Length: 249
Image: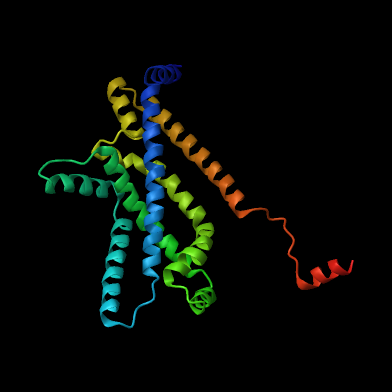
């Protein structure tokens, strides 16, 4: 009974703090995922530009692709907690002790991390498109950018939507590492509540339930959106024979 009493006491006295933590967690996760998606799309388009025959442009493309590959490998190969500390305190070190606003820093950190993962997702989606579509667009006189924007990316977006949605869910949970720089997200609120109440297990139990509810609801909402975008599956495919038969009747 003490456990449930502790739960009731914590919710009655600290529900506003938990609500604030949930709000910041969702805001950071959503904004960072959208920025990461845009970043990933831009990098995906750049990395799929055919190499030029001009030596200077070819060399420039090589350098840019090397830098983009290094960015992706570094941010995919290191923990976000380490990235947060390096970026936040690294800026303070170079700025003579002046730090960036916490929420802005959090969004930048999660966005850069997410962009590295989505860039690879986008590249895989672009490579999965039939090469004949690229050749057809080239034959029509379309540039690489026009081909991507008008033909390839709309198809890629449908195929990568589940993976991007999964990144959003991951970001909801991974924002917990931002407490290392003092961002007031859900895990930070839990840590402060524990220090104020000395009730470790009840506080973290409440936090676990909240994280589960958030990810569960977001996952269900995203699946509904995916169904709307994909459309109905029980459609009929009309071939030339079927059209001729229908006209004869």
